[in-house]
Amino acid sequence: MYNQQIRKEVFFMTKNIVITGGTSGIGLATAKLLANEQTNVIIIGKNSENNRAVQVANPNLHVYTADLGRLNDIKQVFTKIHKTFNTIDSLFINAGFGLFKPFTEITEQDFDRSVDLNYKGAFFTAQSALQYMPNGSNMVFNLSWTHHRGLATSTLYSSTKAATSYLIKSLALELSDRQIRINAVSPGYTNTSQFNEQSIETDRLKQMLSDVPEGRFGSAEEIGNVVKFLMSDEASYVNGQEVIVDGGLTSVQAGV
Image (cartoon, rainbow, N blue to C red; front, side, top):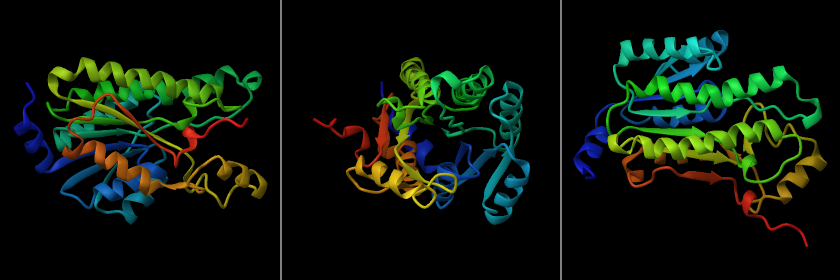
């Protein structure tokens, strides 16, 4: 039976929120949004030098270093987080690697790097964190619009995201007895420091924007706001779902 009291207690107490890939882009934007609430926001990044800079600029965040494509790193960082914060109330699995190459040019190294972080890393991040997550907690995965539409050069990247989307639905069922909600956000074109409207050649940008009914890229904060909602008690009846935040990109009708 659904226990409303459990949900309320988890939402209104001081929450411990972990964000992987949290030192840049969507992860950092989400961390900043959540740090304004009554929360301990713990972010994990791979680059120790960058992590130090983020920590100095954001003293209200708790920064940890780990390579989430490596199982030992995953286990070790969550053990450290547990020792300091005890429980994890919300987890945003955001770390990922985008490789866009023609199918015939993808190497075994490319394959392993992508699968290790995007699927294996996400899988074992969820598993490692789960042992420290109380009943009524939640996870949000970062997927991508690309596994909903064919995209040349995205064969490998889209495949890893499609695999993770099935993981979400299975986990939502498997963890339902603990009232742990599992959801995902799938961003469309999003302005970040690595990929933005200013960094793209004019003709290519014009073509990309013509496919988006909103006529623009989204912001990292717009994606973060959806993650924040999925973590909150306002989304208490949302489970096993993927929210596509793409300005209508995946809804565009094919030309006739």
